[in-house]
Amino acid sequence: MTQRYCKKCLLRDMPEGEYFKNLYDYIAGLPKEDKVSDDIYESRLARCRTCENLLSGMCRLCGCYVEMRAAMKVRACPRVPALWQAWDQEEEQE
Ligand code: SF4
Image 1 (cartoon, protein in one colour):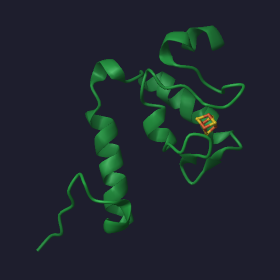
Image 2 (cartoon, rainbow, N blue to C red):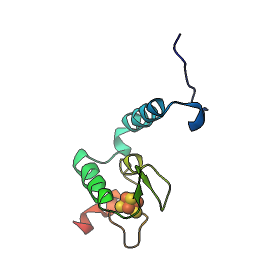
Image 3 (cartoon, rainbow, N blue to C red):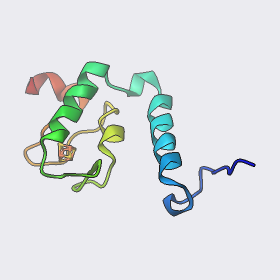
């Protein structure tokens, strides 16, 4: 029988693979109007890859998984100065 995990499970209750599947499912399920384009998403993640605050996929400043944070239009990099901006300010930094 397959073990099932509910939305209320803690990370410690899930095997790592299941947790990351849930994370990617969550990103995929975000409303289209709330998500940035693929180009902006990859640009944001490329900047995170160069950042001293990236640790095991998490941002040490905000505690978010950057692949989730970078997918959302309204989110911005918390670093000062920021390495990427919220979607409505994105053009200003290009
Ligand atoms: S500080 Fe900004 S660029 Fe660095 S990991 Fe966090 S979100 Fe990414």
